[in-house]
Length: 154
Image (cartoon, rainbow, N blue to C red; front, side, top):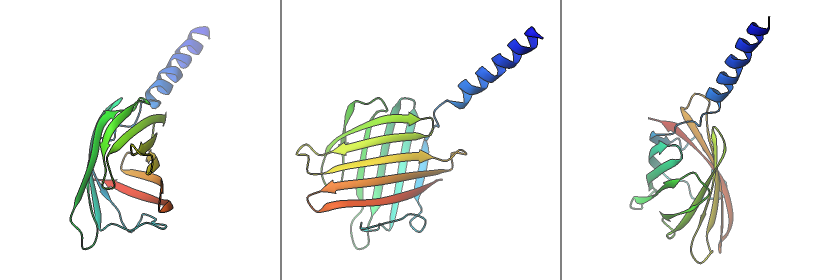
């Protein structure tokens, strides 16, 4: 009986360790504009992301297209480790800090050097890894804006 208990305990521990592995978000992601919620922000026509993820390293680059505007690129390369990394954005360059909340959730804070733009985001990956939800808040001289973006893996 004791041996059975040890085997069951080992299997449960191993299962728990495997379940706690961070979701790998590598790949190409496309914004589902119609499933996203735009609040008080200008809705884009499209957004495409390319992500390379080898925990904790993360490279995140994308292109956003708004109606009647040229495409704009954004991105950074860094890690999910609570340290600041340089990032380029359409409203200015700055630094981003990423922190892992759990195996499927990452919190990030982007800040311009002058502090005029601060964007926070909570990124949550679905259990099957096919959908990524980003809940965003931007505080700027123009006020506070909130929205939710839904991405699908391509």
